[in-house]
Image (spheres, helix red, strand yellow):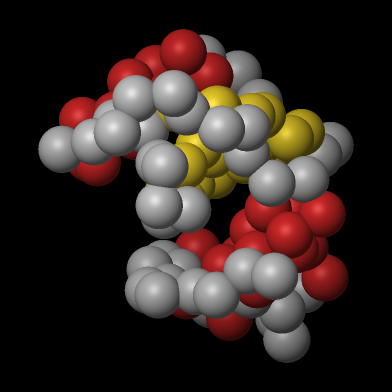
Length: 99
């Protein structure tokens, strides 16, 4: 199961603003909850090294991708990007944020 420790769902502000889109179910849904579902359905692979993040996975929808990985303690970091955003850049950002 997935336990959210923090939700920084800035996209939900866009969803509820005039002219916002209906991504991930529209105005009553949360990007953070959608990410939790993705991770719960397909957990990241194991990383071999303590103190690092790894086991990265990329899950794509029609317009976004969720990039995520975890450490040996099961702490998972994730980011939502556009499809054209390089996943290698998102992975590098997660590695830097983890530190």
